[in-house]
Image (cartoon, rainbow, N blue to C red; front, side, top):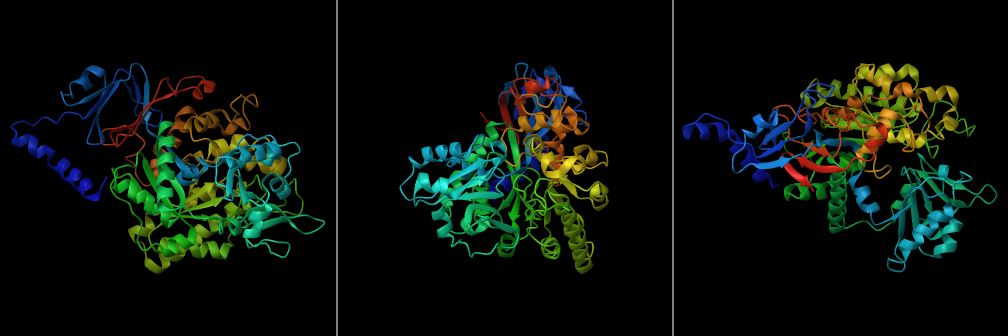
Length: 567
């Protein structure tokens, strides 16, 4: 919606009571939208209660919740009536860690998730190649060597045999490793003499020293730098496709982790043009974006759909590619402790640079050393900004986060609460990683992995997300993983480390109210009077169905700021 229309809407809202009095009455105006004949979990309390039958919405906010007969009395001829027909409405689900633009791009890439071998990944990429112009880059994402037999990294020669001198770059499922053809390596100037970049690793043939084609973390940037950049039109199209897919799966919002300035501009165009169908809380993608961004955080009122909250940094890599920084050697790779993408000193300076300008920070940290460095950097960088500027609101109200928080030294769980750092976690990472995480970490260190209950027991909120397109877009997979710690086929029986399972209400809070609190907007994620009217409607009851049936629920309706955005 254009800024002037936002202003006019707020101005109109402020005049409604006066206009009613001038008309000779003092009754509230009728509702714009009414939901009746269903089960509505308002989450006015953290257990989901009160549970009502109907909801009234006016000017994008909830104005009443109660039984259907009472709510119908708030409607008139101009009110839109939505009969839920027994369906269940909950506060709108938000993904607290996602990548819309990566999703948009991946929709035109080879989908390599679920491949059982490197050969199958090549086969799927070949199917895409037939649809694209000769010589254009071939892109794909989603392979995971841990799912292959044997679980070994692939080699560039497989790509060369299939695609000749065509440049090919296929990203691992987590985006922290890539598989490049010889042509792609040559385009990036990578050969046997290329040194490993700081925070990255070029895997090499132990006999010849030649690159195998596998690039870990910062080494990926060598190839990414030479891939043609998307145009503004490309970005608009990618955003529209990704946002539509997200909404169709029941999402009313995402926390977009790490945007370029060009991607931020695309979000601003969509918001101004009224085509953004969900809320987006954006985080700039690292120091270059912060340095080149001329403004401050954008934190408009709760009804606006786009916020610019913070800056996303990286402490380390990913566990699946052995790039996560550990305090001791990997159990399945002696002598290797992963990678710090930024040193402690550098990350501290970057945190301070963000806080100096009023931004919160979100730091990717997966290994116990990565989390240690991230906590230190947040504590020291924020402290240095306070020393320079004093306790001004822009600094004291910052909401710093660590993203993923997969492996934590047990001695450091308490530091999150002491520092007020929000642990932002993705339940499906736990269930995707559990087949091989014990091999990476060993029997003792794995006890501090994916330990959701450790944070909740310290009275911390736990915003939940998916990290899509690393994982599936649908938040139902996250809800299911959170309450079961099992794969979709129910393995292992009883769940992996079941003491860390969440209750149904805690899982929903992670995708609703706690996601809103992490963004600094308590009016998101509940359905109390005055809260923003964001609603997800399912054909069944996600609070009571058997866990396995969570994955079978269908999204009936999505409402964002009082407007139906799906179907």
